[in-house]
Image 1: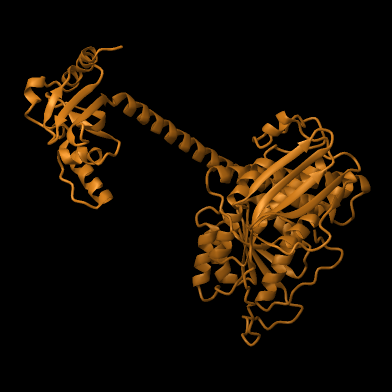
Image 2 (image 1 turned 60 degrees about the vertical axis):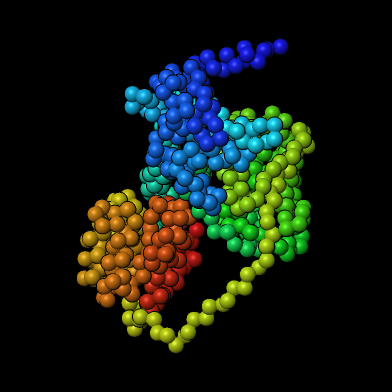
Length: 542
């Protein structure tokens, strides 16, 4: 058993820690070898003469007094009382303050302070054990530098992927746009040509899906993914999801079974993102199923205020090892050589989206029997949507022209391939005259001089951006009523929302979908009183 004297000698002679004992007023009574080495004072110069607060940076002691005064709602003096306040009330306390050595140099210290009590539990003094904190501070500094560097790298990665998304969409716009033109052109392509064009279009849209998945993951990881959480009728989302995966199921010979009756529940979710998650789960259930297999979608109440949407397949199932890796980015679980194409990040994106919507996603699986992927979402109640009535007596700006009038469309686009694609599309519409500008300022000047019936406006233009050009034209009384359609490779939900908020009549994304493109132009013409062109059956409406 260690003797009391031996223990006392060990404490007093320890050079690794400063050990300071005070009386109840805070005046130093003991100053060990470690304190002498660390602070540069001899014990005889401080014992019975100063308090530990006198050895600290006075500005930091004052700041601690002010912080404790605010925390406890009492006035605390900026001296030893500020150091001992918590300890005097039996509260365990460790503080970080700067010590000032006898030679005036400074170093960060971490100090533990404890009240010393007599047999009657009365405070007779305080014990302060301190250590040099420079190593910890250096590690913290290096850690902060590393975190900052990682944040910068993540930001650079996000900006790079966002930029690459835009850059990839631009050539994809030309590939898919001209392929659709060939597919619907005159003379009709031969069966062999149609098969080749169909493959080009299929591959182009697939590549676009991959770009969107990577961009979604980047937005989520950077914290820039914004969702619009609102009450969503679950049966509506299920119906829309069903229509979007039917053709895939038919091609694979998979029987997909949805609830036979409407699911009379509202969930708290982002409509578009919930549909994205469901389509991903359904697509995987079809893709990794056996030929002639079955997919069952089921909805059930699992707890108060919660509903579970389950997607069950009859595929090969997943082993315990695969289940543990399931939600890792770019991990396709050994499916690389099988029918399932993809980046391997769809489930990762789905998991993060579900969590952002306040839900939970999970899976149960049996090897050889299939898997069930499920998501739990919060139930909510429907909101009252007040119908907005349109006063038919309010006259829209009109040209008062006949059906035969040639309408003018201004396209402001700096990319030659994109402009050529628009020219080819509009060239099939003999009642539309197309004029073009290659930058924002030229587009503004041409709009003012020609007063077109509608304008197609790229967002990323040299000089003045498409958004700035929109604002300038909106403030000009001669052009304020011209509908302006955004046509941009900036295709994220936030980009679209911001574009519509800025005042664009419609926001179209590249690559162009011909049906959507033509419909938007027709709506723009109709909105200003020009007669809507009727699209014939022979014209492309994809």
